[in-house]
Length: 156
Image 1 (cartoon, rainbow, N blue to C red):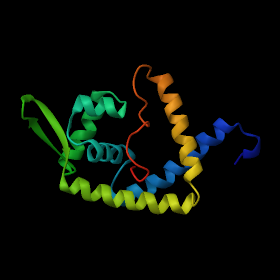
Image 2 (cartoon, rainbow, N blue to C red; image 1 turned 60 degrees about the vertical axis):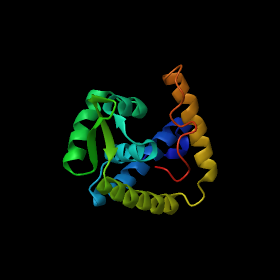
Image 3 (cartoon, helix red, strand yellow; image 1 turned 135 degrees about the vertical axis):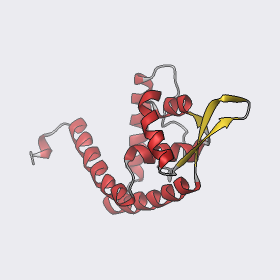
Image 4 (cartoon, helix red, strand yellow; image 1 turned 180 degrees about the vertical axis):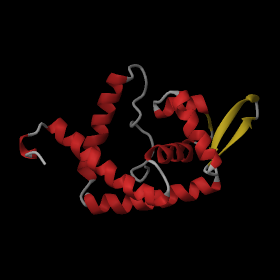
């Protein structure tokens, strides 16, 4: 590996993020999950049922990109789709009991891993949230930053 001491802070951050994600993906693979599926499960858990369009907007991805993931998740019993009560043309996506159980297992694995690799993580979390807020406002002007005020410290 290259001499990391001579790398820029941005490069170090990118490398640390990739290595952390790789390690976390190993844990998720053991549960039969991907990072994308975990993100969808967590979003549905935190905010409840949503249309595919609303869910995609909240996750900052295209609805078409999300569609294939939702179909796989539904066939695996991780989510349900129900017609919206006031407009049956809109299908709401919601977390199934099986999806909730798998999310709980993934959170336990993530907490275990995070404590293993970052035993003193509080200051880093604050800095990362501030960075995400700042960069999100620049990328999505006029919208509330995704990290601002959403979830708790224990949420994935």
